[in-house]
Image (tube, rainbow, N blue to C red; front, side):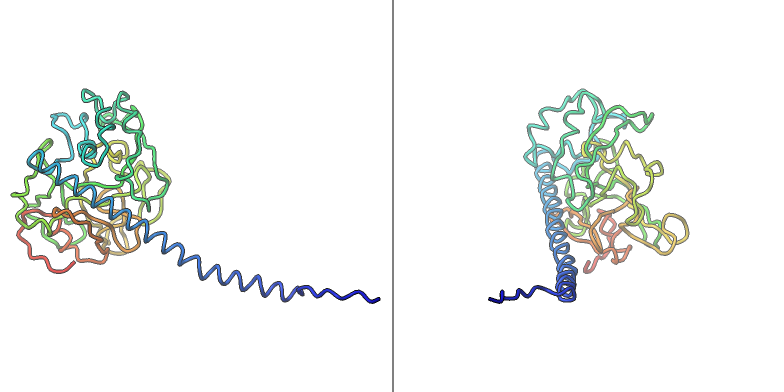
Length: 304
């Protein structure tokens, strides 16, 4: 009796099948990555929305939007707005664990600041939760460690890199330490004024999308960045004449040393004083962006 023959795949057929599978994976992978980033962007937008609701609840309780810093004459002590918002984002236990006689960089509060607060972390930022060294602005000797946050308010605005005007240059976050901004002072309109945006990635230093070898050239790498610290920076653009922006004028997503920075493609999420969370395009006019950052500049703002 002749045994029946068994026909298997030839080498060529096997290679063809493998090639087809590889092509399908190559086609599907970008779609999967895009879907994941869409979900992360949605979560980031929700974070900003929750923070803006918290700012409004704080305003109702205290008569104004909080400043970057607590009531203190020494910028090297106290805490920032992130700590003040804890009771309004369902983090009362963390708020109550705080030693109010100590600073955000004090070892006595390290247990609190080493606790990740999901609302303060953009899911697109790499390496979450990121631990960073903490220190007063002067001296800068490390005193403890804490978890970084990805969102900031703006207390100063510069027109670097553009022809945009900025006068009187008042932002929605008071530049006076311990001060508050009541809604009545936001005369440009709540829907036309930015209070908060992303400035992601600290304590790592990024220029463009490239992480730098060290963060020593970053502004205040130990004093800004922790969610409980003074998460308040200067908005700035970057012109094409001087580093690190040689090659063109940029309004955001170029450096997380100052200004607006995110890891989202094409822009960043910002919170407006009306409580909304908006995606801002990195291709928008800097004149419009600076107009949005001022609270009483009297500018005319169109679609953005």
